[in-house]
Image (cartoon, rainbow, N blue to C red; front, side, top):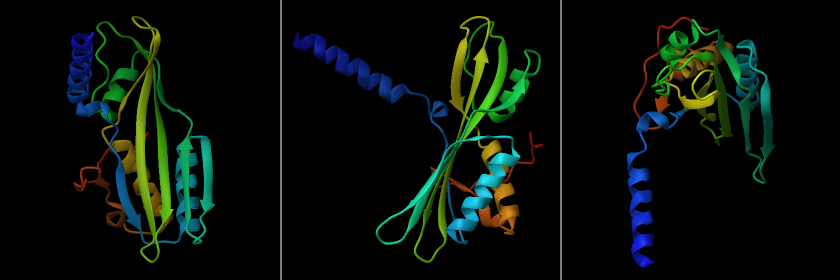
Length: 188
């Protein structure tokens, strides 16, 4: 029995070590030199301008009077139709799930934005986006995968514009701490 347990533990460890990095969502983290209500309104407006309804939209004040909150969009459809979905989603994806003979019916994105007021520095913003799509031929189900950061940078550029900040003020740092350069992609 103990040998069987060790085998399962080794398998679990091997699986944890071999989870591909492209499957993990990239988080953009930055500090915005504005007040919390201004940033909150700008993020909400930027999301709704993209055609995204808000699934979750709440903030609260802690005992010290510091505000923090989270906005999560519904799944926003980027593209529909078997002919163009794969090409569009490849533009925004680290890697689309490999399914031999797949027919992608649509592609979607869901944004999650966490905001936290800092004492004097402004507002800390953490942004992630998760992509998904319906594969309608082989698996006939929705699959999820990581974004390559293009959509997040476009959203941050719009937030900077709404806050009347230079785009360089919102040049994001990924969770690895590396600075990202804005992509010259056409907005969707």
